[in-house]
Length: 56
Image (cartoon, rainbow, N blue to C red):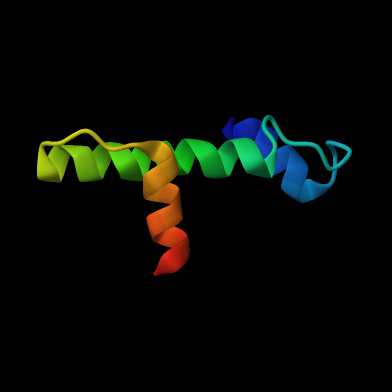
C-alpha cells in the first residue's frame, strides 16, 4: 500500500489508487464506529453513526 501511495504521489500510477475515495471513507467510518462500540459497549449502526456525524 505504501508503494502504491508513493507511486500515486509521484504521478506514475495514472491517478488511480488501490481504492476509491468512497471506499476509503467507508472503511474509516467503520473504524471510528468500532472505536465508539469499544468505548460505549453497545451496538453501533453504521447508517445512524454516519448520520450523527453529518449532523454535528
